[in-house]
Image 1 (cartoon, rainbow, N blue to C red):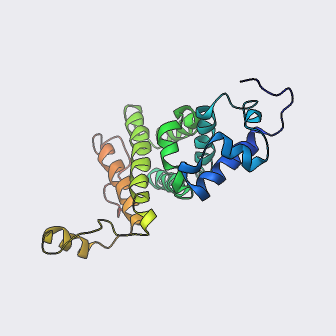
Image 2 (cartoon, rainbow, N blue to C red):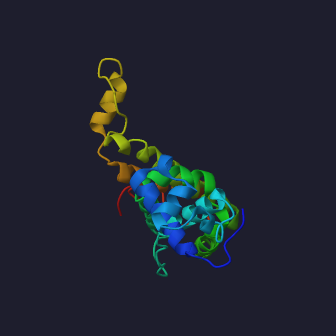
Length: 220
């Protein structure tokens, strides 16, 4: 398709319009013609900035993830707590755009986070975590953060905050007892998952890493 000689819109405004449409109307409503209509331009104008829908979706995924604030790291601060804070920030960024969850799964390029991974690796290195554990920590945290947040989002369309909905006390007595004794919210369970994962990884080389196994998995 021929591109116009002069751009009628900006790359940033197109990405912002796409996110707004997805947030308010859902992925089913999203299309290049819908974005063009939102911006009051022709669909062909979008091709001045984006080769196709996939390129635009990739930029949408990048923009959403870049909303997550990478916290400052104060020398001497518990490195586990820094990673908990970072993971929570990514979780919150995803939860702000529930309709875009599948966009992140399908289109988020890992290289957008490379500079963040470098900072993470430096913090691990400075904290005495062996380099042999860095990849498993960074890769695992990325997968855990995305997977657990997507699981929470599966409940949101129905405004259902139950951890395991539709549990019947007669048919599922053991699970019912477990739910009755659970004291953690979804957010707290997320923190438990992150801390437990990190404790499990570093326990493989306990002599080389600051002890994290004795900490309360939810709070300091």
